[in-house]
Amino acid sequence: MKITKLFRMCNMMILFLFLLAGCSLSQEEFQVVSLNIRYNNPGDGINIWEARIPIIQAYFHKNVPDIIGMQEVNYKQLLDLQKMLPEYAYVGTGRDDGKQRGEHSPVFYRKDKFKLIDHSQFWLSETPDVPGSKSWDASITRIVTWAKLESLKTGKIFFCFNTHFDHRGIEARKESVWLMSEKISEIAGDDPIMVTGDFNIGKRPGNADNSLYDNLINTFRNKNSLNSSEFLSATRDTGDGGTVNGFRPEWRERMSYVIDYIFVSDHFTVQTYRVDNKMEGDVFISDHWPVVSVVNLN
Image (cartoon, rainbow, N blue to C red):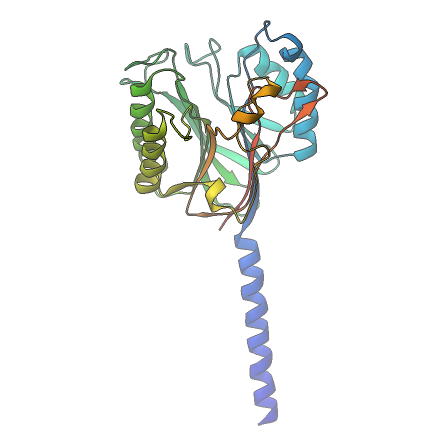
């Protein structure tokens, strides 16, 4: 009788350890960054692109994120980033012609962690498959880049979407939310999804964008089960409070303005959220701060 009882206890212990190991193997941790890199503008004074390259390179080499969604990247900058980040591959083309012209919104991913299954991009317009198209009251052509990735560790599939909304057109931003939400559902279905981007939509007292912010949050939540990682995170470090600096130290009092986001579907749990106020002396990493989340794909 004692031997039988001991045997059962051993079996239960083995089962417990097996389940524990299975839970550990079924989760994978990713560090995700969204960063508007600021286009290569020779009029940026001490913050010109060439002055910021060492800061950007040091930042990414120190943090080694798994996924990076960038905005405002022109082709010259893309070539520089490839040299800076040899351990990464990327997807994304120019918004003006679907090739090299115009700003890119690339998705960078670590080659040693992920396999690229599929990728493409669409334009935030009434004709989303037409390169260079724009609609509504948009001032500039805008795009969404996406990648379908497979984890080399677990074999799990997930999608990354990265975008940069128009900075002037209120109607364009409103319509872009709905279009992007529809395309996410069409492309990714019920698979895990993460979204990075500069949405040029924020919420602060007296700002006309507040209704756009509510529309963004509610549409993504209700149609795509996407929520901002800031509000899902177990711990938050928001730096000075917002994601925009404009290369201006005096903007400290306006730092509560957040327009850069990381959204994740309910397949993910969010461990941390932070905004990195990165400078070297008087030189900024960009006119936006990096937004960072550590997430688990369950």
